[in-house]
Length: 123
Image (cartoon, rainbow, N blue to C red; front, side, top):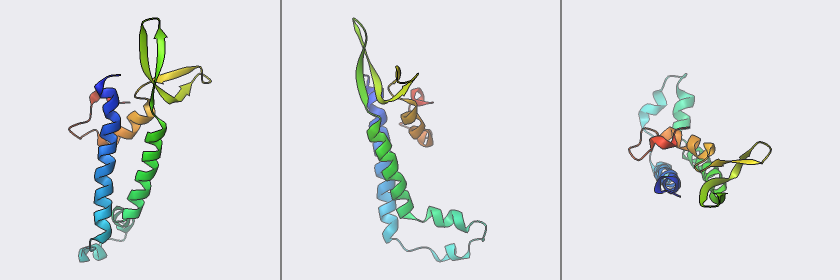
């Protein structure tokens, strides 16, 4: 397994840790007065953005998905092993996805603008 295959876990964990810290900090922050004067059409978006519990719940589900899509080794030929996703299968379970799987690649897409994002992770 290469460093890039391992680092998608590290990359996603780091982004999730950053969001978790921000959400926990937002729990104790005061809501700015001007948010009470937001246009009615925008209120649902502002309320969602200011709801740290929603962010924390979202992160919990993403961490659960991340935990399920772990790399596993499979012998591909007599002299070659490959990293595969231990969860993702297709063709009635007879074939597998190489690691990182489409699920992990999709989880990384929202962070494509981040300097540590790797082009190889694009779905």
